[in-house]
Length: 149
Image (cartoon, rainbow, N blue to C red; front, side, top):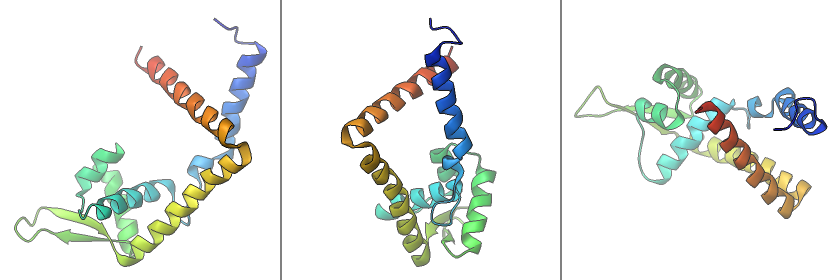
């Protein structure tokens, strides 16, 4: 096993700290915080399949609690990006869907998000981008294994 003070271990720790310091995963995407963006993207995929989702389904798919989803939905509804529809036969069942404005905003946000990664590919080049993705998947697997020990 590598020594904690090895040059490689120090370089890896510094690289991980740099990512945390940038906060890139917490930055707004076209005006939406990451949680809002994830809900909108999920609703857009449901819309593409001609379906609507319940809060519990969104919660399950995003692996967050229903109260968390409800808070996000309240903000998105207040801002006119989503709407709640009560099922006529079962008034307890509420479906969530994107409004026209929500569809447009989500598409813009998804494009901006995609452009970030397309820019990274341009910066690194195709080969290094593929290599980076493969290494990040391996890193993810490693940390999952640690968690399951």
